Image 1 (tube, rainbow, N blue to C red):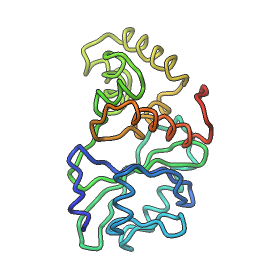
Image 2 (cartoon, rainbow, N blue to C red):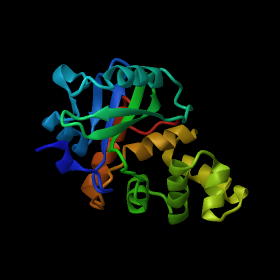
Image 3 (cartoon, one colour):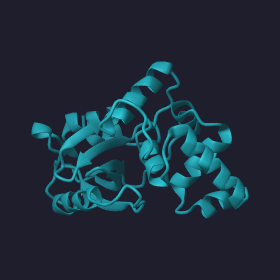
Image 4 (tube, one colour):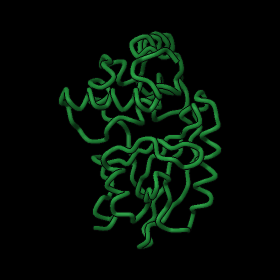
Length: 212
């Protein structure tokens, strides 16, 4: 099975959590499938490597840089990658704090945004809060998110404070990290929600929610 069989169409998105030394700390199910095929990435000995040398050096350096940035740094770095068959992919690399980086692997041309139902169910947000959270994923600032949703900046600030209080966090970058760990496929079972919360706690090196 080639990576073409796992083409991302909004239902499967590979998400990994890496240290600055490329040590794998977390991989969701689509990422595990990609590593099994070894067409784009592999993880021998717990250290992530690309299957093609093309772009490997830049990707490794980017993960290292993003891992040492503070969690408040929202900027995403994008690295081009190729499979062994020449298919073009990109790696979106986000700072995750604590010497780690979130990597989202996308086939070139694919786009991924967390689904509203997954944001509501996993993060336990209201409809309005979930819409704001997703808008913040797609744009750079709270003002832009409010404009996209057609709400006032004061309403946006109030909803964002409510999101922070619900999740026990205090930074927008932490919210983005939580969104990155959400599944891309539509699953609404309580079992999946509980599993996601365990994965989120494990990615933070602890067993419960604590304020960021």
